[in-house]
Length: 166
Image (cartoon, rainbow, N blue to C red; front, side):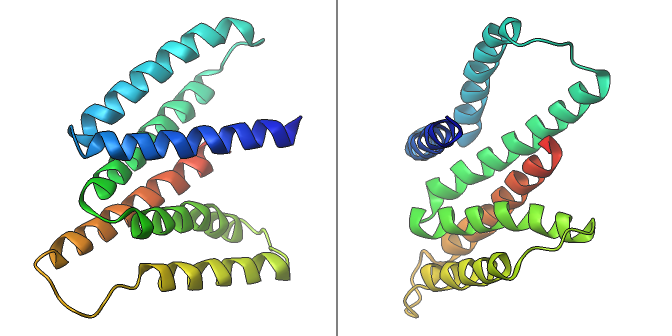
């Protein structure tokens, strides 16, 4: 069951990111994020009565912080997709969203296995290779750097979101 839920979440995130990126090319990314959060809030309010327990003040505060971090990450991600190339933006944001929790974990005393460290090194190398573009400078060069900076910001927002919800 856990594998099916994980697969469903991955498909939902992938489809949502793709459609959000497409929408962000047509309307301002902030509008896409606002409406996606409104829909998410409606679904959350509808599902809340089905979950047992009462949230604490701390849980609500951390949840709000996580929501702000995640929303900021999504807004930056959609903006990066609107001005950049998905094949560059997505891997950079994905790598950083995974790296931030790893760095926080290392700082708090976690020690990953050799295989995990090798995976991190391979992912970093893959992102560097994927992100390479032709050395010919074009008029779009500033947009590439803007997209890369936005992707870095998005990855940091996503990674801090994951740390917050942990």
